[in-house]
Image (cartoon, rainbow, N blue to C red):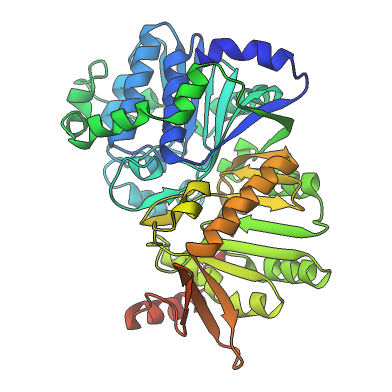
Amino acid sequence: MLVSSVAPLVAQHPNKSGIRLLGDPKDAFAARMLLALSAQRTLDIQYYIWQNDITGALLFESIVEASNRGVRVRLLLDDNGVSGLDEALLSLDRLDNVEVRLFNPFAQRRFKWLGFITDFSRVNRRMHNKSFTADNSVTIVGGRNIGDDYFGATSTILKQDLDIVAIGSVVNEVSLDFDKYWTSTSAHPVNDILFSNKISKYCTSEYLPAQVTNPKRDAYITALERSGVMHSLLANEDLFEWDTVTMISDDPAKGAGRQSNDALLFTKLVQIIGRPQSSLLLVTPYFVPTKEGVEAFIDLAKSGIKINIVTNSMQATDVLPVHSGYAKHRKTLLKAGINLFETRPNASDEQSSEKKKRHFKSSASSLHAKTFAIDSKRLFVGSLNFDPRSMHLNTELGFVIESPKIAKQVEQVFEAQAAYASYRLSLDKKGKINWIETNKGRETVHKTEPGMTIFSRAALALLSLLAIEWLL
């Protein structure tokens, strides 16, 4: 199995980390299931959102199986993203070998939103980290939460995302970081928060009954069995690129508002990657650059740096206030020569040659990946959005990867995405924004923002006037 077979590969590449991109959603879930099913000693799992759906239930079941094999499982979840799972989590915690903790938990369980009124300064800070580590030997880090819309198990909108599966030296860094969060003052044992005398050991049919009878469950499991990455990993093939990889994360004290600036992920990131020399590709679902960020981008553009930014269009975003924090800066960025692309939610899948090359694929989708490439030489992949919330409020985690090959691979994915699945923004002679859509080789120019209604235009205008950027 994968976990027991990585030691020889790691020994051949001292002080390096083996990495592989997980762009395909089913491959990304299959890899997690494989880690859970092959772990022999430990599973350390950390997520912002865990949904009550097919993939959430399947991973809960894999945790039960692991605990039955004697694997020690530690499950650390942000309490804002586990709606409806209190009893399931409490039952898992009562299994032998399983411990569950919640980050910045809400005192009121039924109406959690009340916490934002009574304890705003604390509960407004969330743990946005995502990692899945088996036996301190293999880890998956990236942008995906646990839910059907991240793993292609739903017929509704797919959240396009990107993860990294890694082995080698960086895995120990992830394990140590998990320990810091697990023992932080913001992580509370679920038994200290949730109370019930009716809880028995976890069983999906009892705690998530809708997922046992979900007609899509068997079809999704069949699709997983056809996963290319699953077969390759089971065959113990060396699928990894071996490079220098650095894990960076926020100090968990950020969850209590007690972090120093030097301990912020964004500060570390800037120190590691330095100033771009030729190009910057930024991919982020939530882009709120703020006035200071806009000035920094313009400064880079003036020095000759080619900048491409891809984010969600208004049609594709699921958070309109965040879109308002981006929209008001578009003209300024375009005037500076910065290229802006906005993901279309219903891009055509008929361009098969391009479809085969891309990692992010769905006929109905919303961008959720968080990555950027610098000078076609190095890149960041992780949970960090380019917005004030990620930089100052939420805790984040990611990898800085020194790899021209992987950086160029991500850039190629972007180029394919931009070519047929995004609006390209430009300014006309009057200085107004046009949205250019390419479909089957033909361009359509939209003079007004696609999907905009009178109501959404008014809402966007109002939101842009409010002093809420720091919350976005």
